[in-house]
Image 1: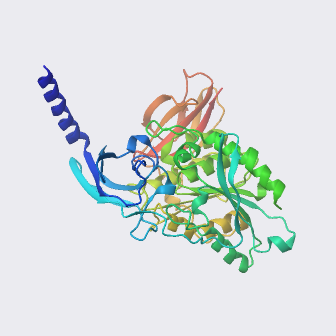
Image 2: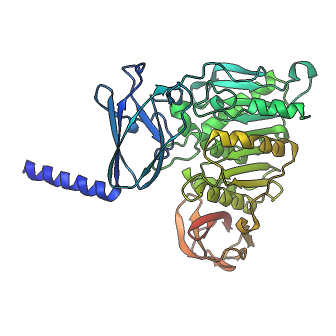
Image 3: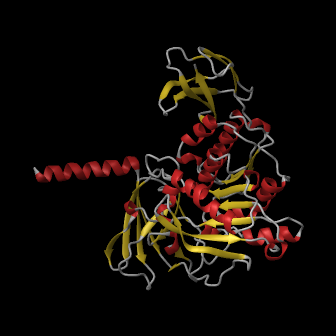
Length: 468
């Protein structure tokens, strides 16, 4: 019986591997200075780039041989090795920054053998400008019960001018100013702002908050993902609004009003930055949203649609054609652009720009930072917005309604469908063809609903409906 069970399990495992695909990644050499007690993790686009997820610890087979098997679909894999945080990420042969590893996985059973050349640390000299400092290495976050390093950039004339300045809050502080602390390159925000100041810019204070390493995913996501977890973003945003901003306004010469306050981030940091700006329109009037991970939770679209415009805003979004399979990052950004328009924001308030060479990388965000800053804080931008063919503003009236809604859709939606969600995310209307005309909600209880529009199977925007 045991033999039969063993054979059955073996046959099942082989069948599962053939159907779902299994890639075994094996390390045959690690740096000599690796602490013996440290685990080695793999982080990549398959686990939300979580550097310390215990489900992705490699098994130590013998000596310096480590191994992990991943169930994957065919495609290009991007990943890195860590010892549990981005502060312990692998480096190149000289101990410096190592770009993301990539591997074209064809499917089925496959094995990839690699070596870790070093643990990053080759960049020992700070690249931060003299007008960058650290407010605190262990600034307390009462909403989260932990501490964090907080960086501060002051304009070159801060000490002598007596002026007050607007403030920009930024995520992933390790990567904002200093290559010595970055885990994947820096944004060079200090160098960029110093150059703009020399060209006549009035200056801005930048407050950059380190991410929490293993807690980054949780802090930067307002909603949980069924695969990756998360969902602690509200507490993180409350820390910025309730604790950090009051501290900065008290101790530095800031223009504290919402019209002078912005927030910015990339990837999951872009997701949480947009969420913070929409949720706290009384605090922020500007948001820089770079390569945002809108894929993490569909709730980000319904949150924008439900909250709507409460005050004048400036929202600057970018994404690269090389991000995601088939440019999915650009598709998601355009869907958010359309959702923002349908939620009441004007085309003068929202910019969405895609770049053919744009990648999910710090060099891309560093390059695009100056243009984003100038538009957010100075109102000038030369880049094109979303092309007309990608704009989609749904219109509905009357809204609220007690029965039928009259829907007007743009002509560019040639193969469109829609579904309807309840306010708690339940699907109450399966996908149907989308066309201008009446949409009935008879039989549904009074309340808030969300119409999601799709074109060629891809989400293109979300609209709030109110059933009386």
